[in-house]
Length: 86
Image (cartoon, rainbow, N blue to C red; front, side, top):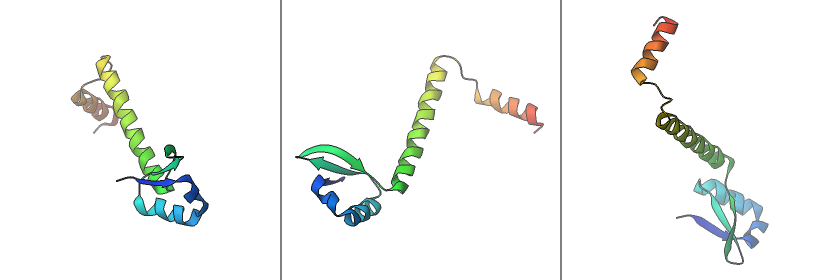
């Protein structure tokens, strides 16, 4: 379950930092009862960024396949073996 805290709790920065590091996921900040911001630790950010990148690459690959730009994996491996004499 996501952590949700009101914006006034940001005054206690040490507590908010501890929370962000302990949950290893984004912490949602509300203002007047509505979503306003998202905070997360650097470790969580880097992990999320890596995941986003993987999904972006997969989506790009799928689009290439749909456009007929991809090549068969066996052909790709054979080409690599020829190129590097494996």
